[in-house]
Image 1 (spheres, one colour):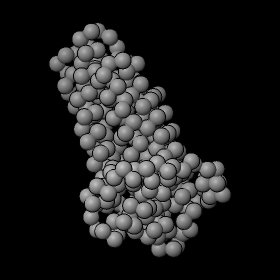
Image 2: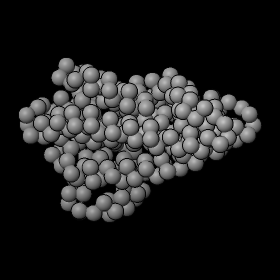
Image 3: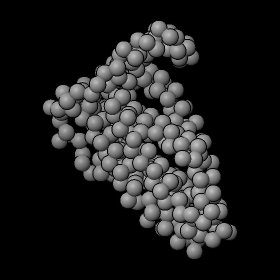
Image 4: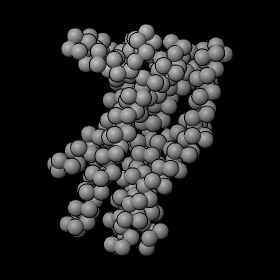
Length: 263
């Protein structure tokens, strides 16, 4: 397998792993009451995700470009990268119990020390790494059962599934579309990725984030039980997983639709 493709798969897994863990930060913030501290500490992981995003585009462009030169349809490669998003999400789901256990301790230390870099340096000590490994926790059925799922709006979750699907294939479909257009329009087609992800981000900001923020804020103020936030997080993660799978079916049609604008 091409090293570029391996690197792209690895970066995609990292991006979606961190995106999945981001949902679970709500649980720690409500349970500990340290919402701002939790977000501040998680920004380290966001920085890693954004760095991975930065390298993702050039790698996709090089893979598609080589396929065009060789006259080979890169269908397998783009679907494989989309599947990597599903793998990253699944790994994130498995890691949530362990992540929350370690993350909650890190937030407490941040509250005392007041410095993110010092916590990062301390976490890299061999003894602390060993402790983190010993803190590994498997997901249990009790974590998901007896939650008030009926209190979470289903339409809002369907919307999150669709937005996740668009976000998952946004860059891939735009670069894949360049395979189906003439040479003079290939740059324009690949540049459409920003527009697609921009639309997904707007929908997420306007329609999904406010509703989930309301539920989280109500739990922080004691107007909702902690279980409602837990149900929200589980269903958001489930809808994200479905969204990455839906992306497989939307990838080719999305690429053809983008290509049709430059025909």
